[in-house]
Image (cartoon, rainbow, N blue to C red; front, top):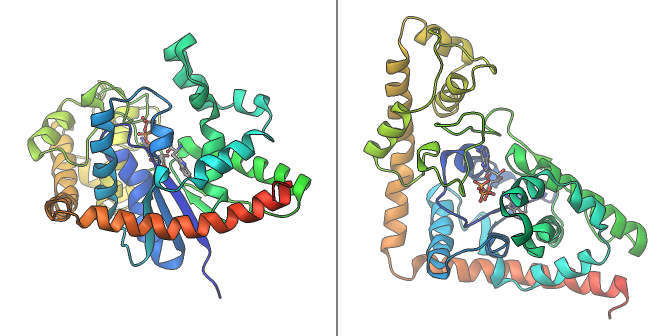
Length: 328
Ligand code: ATP
Ligand code: LTN
């Protein structure tokens, strides 16, 4: 039986953090053997908010390097940079012409992100979900593994695909979001009421995948907790709950065992243990990252091959789409 297709994307808007890893990348690596996979550094999405060109250029390569370092293998997955495959912008335009503005006005990510920028907010940020739909639909994607915050965008993508299929015939596969049961929303350390995020200015909120052991210890030590004492999974205590969830995800122990283990321990010890588990989990990833970026041209070569493979597939789909709309 032919394997189904997985597509997911990640922005180069900052340094990758533990939320990106636990909510997305680690799962991409684990599921890659059972699917045809496309993983994309979405630089065109990244520029929907202002970026410094030199920083962006460096971050695009860093993110791509970290995908490989996290265990995504070029033999099993196509890894590429979005702007290297022109069909993404092209299909986004065609989809723009069938997407009602009202649908985009309902997107919560747009509402949140545009609130900070008011009048300065770009048309690109508003249109962000349509470009995301183009990413997904170009590859006849069945499944989109993402963190919880992206569920609404994948559902919108389905709606756009359905509308297109209704008007022009069954051109697109309808994709499903795939969200991990635990880890789909890792919270900030300093502010556990908000999700850990790349573009968050407060660095103490995020554990970055390339943080040193000392940085990790300091951030976890300063993590916001509460004035209670007992250590238990409780959604109403976001700080402790988040630390325990991170511990659970990285140790693979069950919740009851974890609560028993910490039942006679202090918050100080919990934090020390969480920090050590994070440090040890990231160590091999960091080593691989430094290895593969140390070899000149290695990463660029992999990305070039990725773009060729993705480009060939995307071009084929574009032909079908253009024809169905009467452009060819
Ligand atoms: P930004 O802050 O610029 O929006 P981000 O940190 O949200 O960036 P993205 O590149 O937008 O990161 O997301 C990449 C993937 O990581 C997506 O699948 C997203 O759902 C997931 N993700 C992002 N933040 C978290 C988080 N805190 N917990 C779990 N998954 C997350
Ligand atoms: N919007 C996504 C990134 C993204 C994406 C995609 C995810 C762009 N294109 C296609 C899945 C499929 C985010 O994580 N903020």
